[in-house]
Length: 499
Image 1 (cartoon, rainbow, N blue to C red):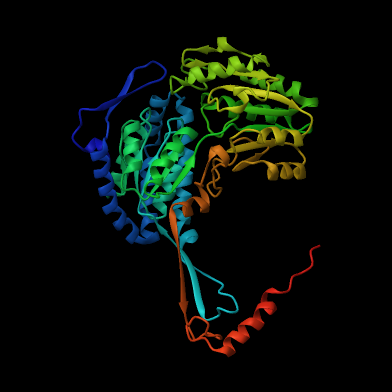
Image 2: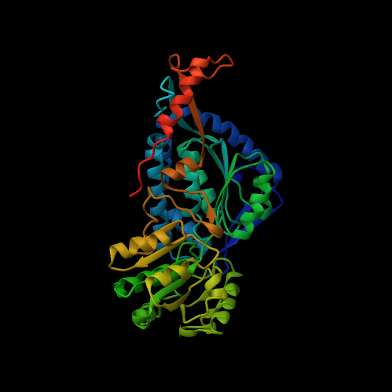
């Protein structure tokens, strides 16, 4: 159910196509009363949804998936109209997202069902189990750059874990949220997934309301505000806050493959990808060759017309951020492709700048646009050190033919995800958890960890027989205490020598 089903309030927002500024659709702006009402409905739906059990939830989720898939092209149209991205990119977003929904629906029972754990020698009389229970109602606050894929990383797994969801999308891209909520109504028909449209005040109302967990995607600064508000009621959150992702290219790397992936990760979706490519560290001996290959590929990209390979900045102010980073980078670096002239309103042609000082904003802060900085390093070890030298830690990529070197570098990178010989290779692997460290956030979506993220853990110990030593009593005997004292060095006083 969506707010579109309710009487339209006086406050409204109108979405516009970033390409031509034409109005796309109008949606109500939910205030605190409307948000509270949505949560109340979800609270009722959550009881029904939880009590269904894994098998019935799986069937409903797969029916919802089917309802989306059968009209995928329609959803892609909605995404494309509001973000400005090419229709083909929107189709890819839908395909990747449905893969995650499918995995979550089919694997929730295996991951979350109650299981037995070993009790240990002393506690042989305890039958110990651990299980996972849904929080209740999860509030999801989604971004505008991938308005279906990113929030569904929380929604799919929260629903599969047995929670109800209230979804507040970005005010720039509410269409996908309303659309999938309508498909839910058609396929399932209960108040388990509810979309509330609106602005920042709507999001603030959701955080302050009677919610059990929050899944947030956005800037680090906003995440801190969400955390502060959630802390008032000790509401837990999972936060994905963007990155300054680096590609590390060794001397033995396949440069053609590396260049292809740098252009894809750096320029795809107009660079508006949290886990894309913003920095490249290439070993000196191959740096110039890599730059040439990246430039050759990037300068062929089309940024306008019906066959554009990426669209304009979805957020108008983002063009100013890109311009500021380009200007700062050029104070020390050299433009290999493009420059300030590449920025034409909200449309930005590919920009590649080399030899940029590491203190530059273009190296240290998230650009979120089609700007790639390529800097030389003496070795893969130095590349790791440079990659780690920002406040972010979302993803990174390594290109080398040396498997051992790649594994060593991956182990030392302070990121939540590492790709080897690809960029964004993890995005379609539903079993892999996704999330960052440092200013890139915490918690995980996707995979088994993503399912557990939306659960509370409950441990149960059931006594099945009398204990060997009756120590859990105020009337312990001297004999039992004497035996316990002798067991301590027997159980814990020996250690195997280190090799």
